[in-house]
Amino acid sequence: MGLAVVLQQAGFTVDAITLTQMCIQVDPTLALHHFFMGTILAGLRDHDISAAAFFFGTALRLQPDFLPAITRLCALRCMSRPAPAAGSATESAGAPLEDGERVIDADGDGVK
Image (cartoon, rainbow, N blue to C red; front, side, top):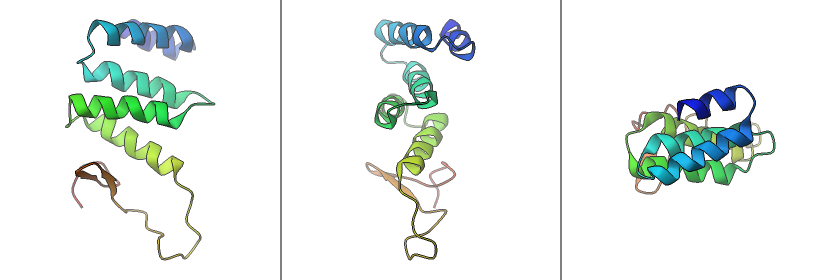
């Protein structure tokens, strides 16, 4: 996995994705592999938010207390939501996000 991080940071994104896919195949139960794949996909210019969210969600299913995955998933959801009209009743910077049965708040600590 360390090599995949180096490849991604050096701009060899396709190689990093390929190596991360291999890591997932070798050990699909390790949340870190899925988290890193989501991180790579989220960092692409023309990325598909749902693909990155899928990998962050998988990391959380494998390790529910994986705070970096919670934080990144919240950030993706915030980015994908249309901005509310200024002064609207739905405008709220700290509104919690529902994730299945758990509530994920704005700072990711799970406390409202």
